Image (cartoon, rainbow, N blue to C red; front, side, top):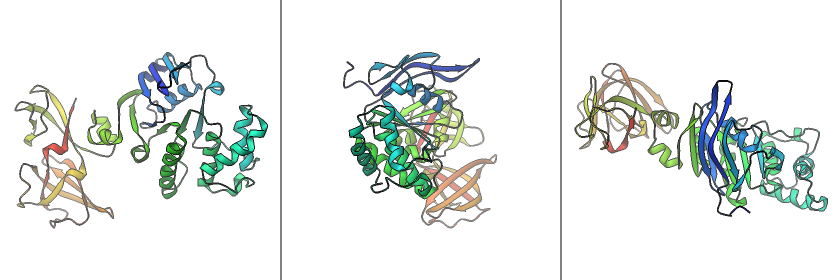
Length: 360
């Protein structure tokens, strides 16, 4: 019997090829018991293929998959202790809510006398008590999502995989369901593997995130670490937005020499001088002030021209141009302290410790 401490999911060298190319390229990954784990990446990066191999809908070309410490090779999807939740919900329109949820138990051949109680409990978890006899056509999009979630939970699987499950919902309902999914995951104590291309969803709900690009996992970490300490330029630009300055390290790894801008102070790095790197600066860490206004002591400051101002409600986004027309963006919360206008010569500034050096 597998140890209780075994990961819910372990992938070792898992790859999937279609023809000459790899959709997933030799992935190593471990997902803990009762973890809300998100796989995040753009369309076509391989995240859905990776999920389908975990479920058993696809067979790996290479590597091994373990579920709760048990090898899953050769185990068909219906015999794996997991369920899936799709963006399309996959509900049966000719069945009512009760019958849709109970269908999962019938497929798994649960004792008939245990079904009513299990269905009631699952509907209570998703706050749909009293909806048993409603037809699917009588439900809102959010209610249909809850029925699909109740059906996924009713058999008490150890693992639930969710493939873009909120994609069909409007923005407000989507935000509400993000919190609801996290509440349910904590309350039930089940492992969630959540596949999405939506950065905000992943940051809002996840205990950890794996960022994928071109079939590879580039970084696995907590949402805060992924956002504040991205491992690559792709991660820094895909999770939120970043300004990038490219050049070569100087002064013992404490400065970046950028053509046309001179030497810019950076957080100390162990990479040797002359190494080509990118410097990532988040827009919210940048201040925009009128030319000639003093900046904070120790801050990096560069002259720029303000090209566009965008009102965000919670603040303002400033699109600036550095010398050589290099774009640079700042986002300022609330009211801007120093009056600036489109076309003005301005100064963009930030603390060196609020930037990130990324090796090429």
